Image 1 (cartoon, one colour):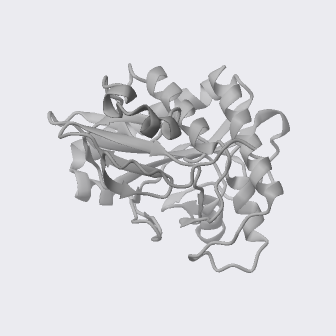
Image 2 (tube, helix red, strand yellow):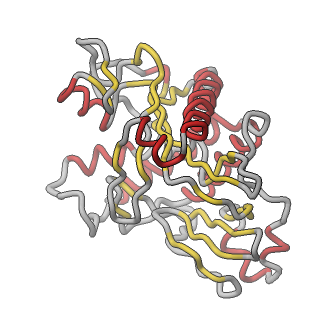
Image 3 (tube, one colour):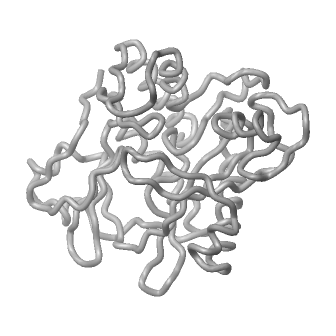
Length: 294
């Protein structure tokens, strides 16, 4: 297995925040360093075992999408190099391939979730209510069915250990103002639709995804955090996709499915994962990267 990084340690920079997967450090008033570790969270709980090489994959996939979608929306990437941010080669070495230098932006308090297929919490909601997050859907849909049209189902951003809360569009208007709420919704739908088409041509269905956004000093909406990775999305192989059951996946759904077989209440601490699950998940992440970026 590749070397793993569960938690970064950069003594020359101030640690701002350690999230579910990413460690964020202050560089100066205009820049931050984000290190993508091999930590994995499921059901909003950080699991004790890292997925080998996962952080490198997530970083590469995100950077690919940031570059590809730069004409649609600005992103967080900065012109400052990693060498400039971390001049000490020994300190830099453990995070090479995992770290990016980003602009300091004001993060918006909303996660922009876009769904093209009926799965996960959306499927559970549909079974209870006939809709997803208050959006009514036709009767008789199966698990993993493609939705009649792509839907936007935002949520509030939760602290580590807490659960995100689904909200309706009007609630995002209250949080962001109507113009910004509409801009977030519209660009999220556009990004997902374009990415889903691109990925489908490479044999991957992007069932759903989440985006996060921030504002620069001029109030310009900017794509932040990560973009269309196996952590923030559900990736399914198109050649074996069949509605009616939970499809095989290139993402952490394999871990979620395993965890659902355990007697675990989905609160911290999370259970350890068998080596077979760790290795198979690592392989899935790498395959997704290869299909999308090459």
